[in-house]
Image (cartoon, rainbow, N blue to C red; front, side, top):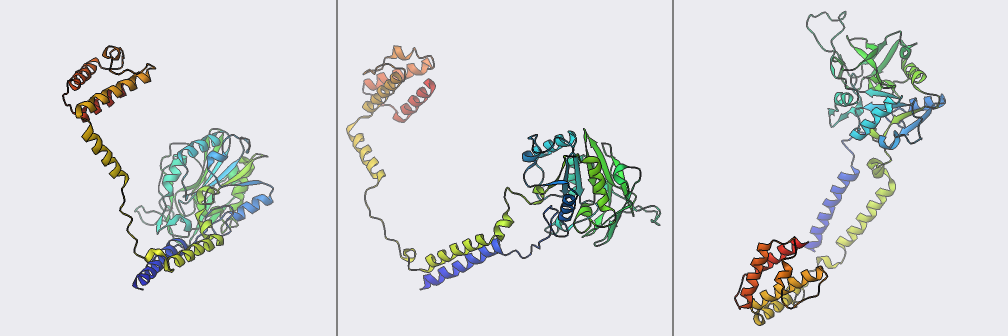
Length: 419
């Protein structure tokens, strides 16, 4: 009875561990991510539906770029727009990055929504904000530094950075005179968490500024030509999300981009795969599938029945019969040969068998005794070692005992040399 009580306690502890690892999601608040099928505040569903209503072809990319951006005929070769958001849950691999650069250079547009000047809920993992600047640099080779306050609003002589408080509106003023800012005065969004405003630090490539931050001495949106295509970098990741797409002139920025960057047969692609929406494998969807939960509980129930039932597992195991084992047979045969066969005879048999193995490998009939002249015609053999082997064999013929282990190793080495 005591064994069953201990087993039951262990089963309860195992169940608690399984529940905590698989089913208990406390401490991990669910936040919406920038995905084209996400209806939460951080998703792009509103933007996607609006584009589809305008007759724009839209595709959710849920696989690696190596499966989508290759020249396979599934997409027009040029005139497409890819929307990607940084930071990403799964980073773009090196082979994907090379393919993405080539795709842009062929005449396509990459729209990067980067969480630089704002801090979104999905950019915080374990209480730590993911680094967007490194990812942006890998894609654009543009480095950043903190921006200072607007000189008209800064009464102090000392330089200070611009801080955007949580829940505070972040406004961008469009720079007129550019096709992408036509009809745009203000772009507006809100930062979920406190953030700082950044500006390019002596970029190594040509940047065309399209907007400025209202409260800082910094530009905010940049157009970068790349081959026959272009990259549009927006340092406010939440600007086109469900919560902000209808604010100010945000939608006009998308309309202008598609008017000048999307071909008639072009497609708008949403990079959902690197934000966790992937057809490759979705662990979250697996855990939330009711069939998975029912299967787990069925297996756990069967296991509990087995653990607590009248099984032989709790009965002391019977000792196996003490019969002869294979090792005992080998020791018996070895002992018999040791008593009946001298070391000299054993050595002679080893050499003769080795020599006949060599003759068979060369297609020659076996012989009773080694032919040393024939063996010296084998070019792969070291002649000094053949002479030494002949000397050992002559000693064995005279009845002398030799080191059988050393002789065995020598024969193996000579056979290895022959191949």
